[in-house]
Every structure is written in structure tokens, then in C-alpha cells.
Picture 1 (cartoon, rainbow, N blue to C red):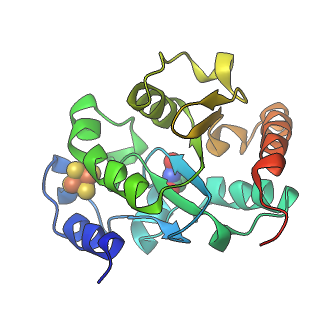
Picture 2 (cartoon, rainbow, N blue to C red):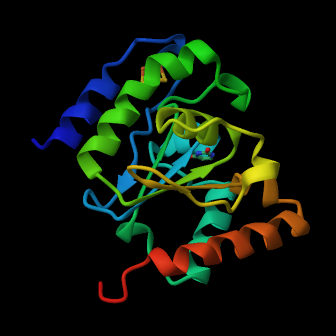
Length: 187
Ligand code: URA
Ligand code: SF4
């Protein structure tokens, strides 16, 4: 069992916040364990909770389009979330839930050791910018901006905001183009 699998096992048994009570399945994350690019979303939604996999619902469909638009395959990157269990009715994560759950994310980051971290939406962006010593601002102000620390951090809008919003789709497609230069030429 590698370290990532150990983390996975811990998450399956985790009761550190109340979300374990209502989850069907935790969503640990998915992708390449030596990915150069790590995508961090917010929390599992309905279908993610049913299937135990990240971004498999409507937002996931659009995420797949975004990745395809720059020639990235899901299996080349790693995708996870701030929270590993679904909040009831997809409500926002609570501060105490983020506090309880993010040690798992921290360990995933350490193990995968990506060069680039894409944060999707306000919750992932706030947590990661803070972790790497930056002040956070609303995503509307900083989406597509490149932060350089120990990692390269690029905040983006959450793909769910674009599902019924063509203008947001365009913005996200534009922002994803920034990633092209961070994708290795030889893979
Ligand atoms: N939204 C997220 O933030 N994460 C998922 O895995 C699915 C939808
Ligand atoms: Fe544990 Fe995170 Fe699930 Fe809460 S959300 S029960 S901290 S794995």
C-alpha cells in the first residue's frame, strides 16, 4: 500500500466531522499519483457521492471539456477536493469541516508533489493561497492570476458556475489556456 492508499483508507474510516453520517461514499480523489498538475475543487456533489469519484456530474462534464480544450487527459493530472464527503444539499463547507478535512489534502499534496495547483472556486482558492502564505481575495478578482511559491498556484472559477452561464464558460476556457505553458511538451 502506498501513502496515497493509506490516506484513502483513513478517509474511508474518517469521522472527524459530521459529514460521514450523511455521505454515501467519500471521494478521495483520482488521477496520476505523480501528476504535475493538481486540481482542487470544493466538495463532492450528488453524483460524486454516489460514485465515490470526483467531478462526475454536470460540473465534471464541463471540466472534461476544459481539459480537452487544452489537450489534457484526466489520467495525466490528479483531481481532488477540499472536503472528501458531500455536504447535505451541496451547502457550502463549514469552517470546522475544512479544518477537520484539509490535513488529508495536505498529505495528498505532499505525496503527489505537483508543480502546479489549480484551485477551483472560492473555498479551494482561499485554503491554498493561505497555506502558501498569500492573502486571499474573491475569485472574481484573481481568477487566472499566477501565484509563485513553493508551487505555482492558479485560481480559477469553479466549473459549476459555468454550467448554465455561457459568459462564465468563455472565461473558464480562456483561463484554462494559461495552463498550456505548464504542460510538458513530451509526455
Ligand atoms: N464540485 C466539486 O467541487 N467537486 C466535485 O468533485 C464535484 C463537483
Ligand atoms: Fe472526515 Fe473529511 Fe469526511 Fe469530514 S469530510 S468525515 S473530515 S473525510
